[in-house]
Length: 209
Image: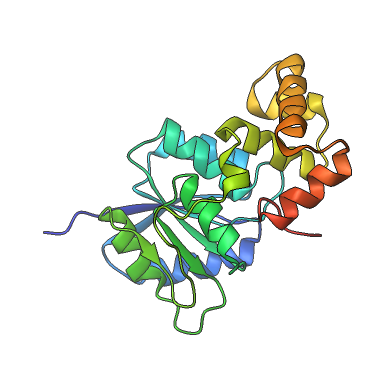
């Protein structure tokens, strides 16, 4: 007998979540146990519900999908994250998988197989959707110089968050965030916040507005 696969859907558009729920619940072995509209809700619900798979959008308010993935993988190691995104650039795929996601699928792929991807990820296999590529061990030398926490801080800076807001979101002191910001600028040889934002966009850490 196949164990039921519990799924948490994370997307800031309710119609998108509703559509994915219908697709997944057409399969008798998949049950959607919760829905979240942003990264903070996703982390809380993942900790409460312990889903086997989290279907995660990347571009969301508050914490984005990459940051939420990193926290869920750390706090709920039994959960496997499948990113479902509009972004096909290699940088987005690399950043999502480096954060701990097990799979990456394009929302607009004609032959998207969401059910198959969920089952593959639930079984512990890596799933890269059609039209995407990811080379294991492929490293971005510039990003590799940053710690996981520095990447989180960089993403939030690029999203326009203040040091105080970042501290609240990441449960850090304002002083610690200031140190991370200073370290980022020194490592990247960047001297202005606007340059940090451009760097984050170029590396696929945030989507251009």
